[in-house]
Image (cartoon, rainbow, N blue to C red):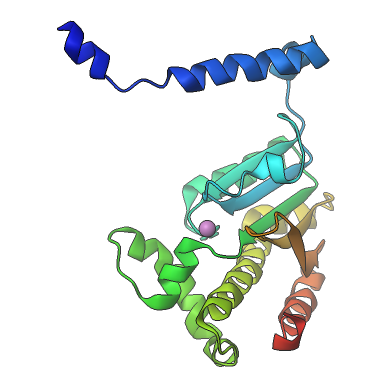
Amino acid sequence: MPAATLARMPSLDHLIRSNREWAQKILRQDPEFFIRLSKQQSPRYLWIGCSDSRVPANEIVGLPPGELFVHRNVANIVVHTDLNCLTVMQFAVDVLKVEHIIVCGHYGCTGVRLAMSNERIGLSDNWLRHVQDIREQHSASLLQVQDAADRANRLCELNVIEQVTHVCQTSIVLDAWERHQPLTVHGWIYGLNNGLLRDLKYTASNPGEVVSEYSQALTALLPADR
Ligand code: CO
């Protein structure tokens, strides 16, 4: 290959260099960190969040590698036939025995905004259809929010609430609760503009809590609460 062509080849050397610096920084603080971590992981939390690059799971809760098991997809959707998400959940609950599952959405979610506005982008429309189903389910409540951006953010909140219910309805979580394995499911939302998490007050530790917590979370979303 001519040298001129080689020179134009896109390079990601800056990321490799950055990785070296990151690893060295950790080793300066804890020389055994990677050796210890390579032997086993025992995270207490499963994070189900949006793929959005502005919502880096570990960073926003200040947890180092090894502490958070993570599944991310566009608009943090939990679908009962999504083998990928179900596999992550089953591995986390049955093998790693995580004690908490956090569904974390975020305000300003592009996937939710597209679902809200019916904007077509291609294949992903089919995935985002799940969010549109939630939009239709809660159309009366959404219509009460006047501002379009606020309305999309309300759908971000409603989406988290519905996805928490989906997590609670999986055979994985129901079976864990049936055998009295400690497992709590939480619904949170993250603010891109302030870096802060907000608890949406939907926290379920057994099947009996799902219905009451769901209603409580919806009630807490009254427009006056914004
Ligand atoms: Co998003």
